[in-house]
Amino acid sequence: MVINLKLTEMRDNESWKRKALPLELKLLPKRIQNDLETITLDNLPRLGNYYIQGPVGSGKTLLAACMLLEAKRHRFLEATSGDMLFITVPEFLNMIKATYDDPEENEQAVLNKFSEADFLVLDDFGAERTTDWAMSMLYLLINRRYEEMRTTVFTSNIDLQELAEKLGDERIPARIERMCKIINKTEF
Image (cartoon, rainbow, N blue to C red; front, side, top):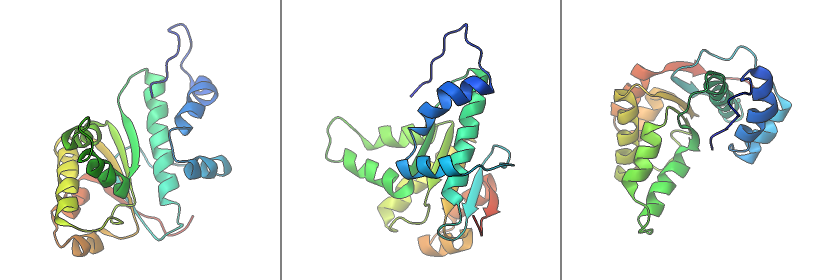
């Protein structure tokens, strides 16, 4: 969804809060919308690539959602465009699988959409079932984003070493480690 303001309207923090933010919040899952209404996260990390790891309930997803909204606020204030997306890894893989039964869709289009997004949150990384097919799809996505230096925020319940063990391969964790700052989230 693109937020359009008249050219004569001022793009400032007040217009972001009043007009754009409510629309952007609607693009997030309802649970995250509800949680964001009850918290404020001050001192967000500087915009960039992050791998946020920690136990269930530690606030990883909310931190990633806040980072996404902050990136969208910057984009809004600068009056620039570009895709900024939020998706769980299992849902991303499910979207690709759904293209196999839909002649109107194709795997490449889904991969391109998420590979080319300017800012992408991949929530629940490592929650997917490890299959050769899933590994292939994730490798393509992450390698494209890595090579093109696109901003990516990952959330996961496992650290990169555990991820490598789960995947049985170090290529994906190695790229994530090279592209991301690691945040250990231990409490909400």
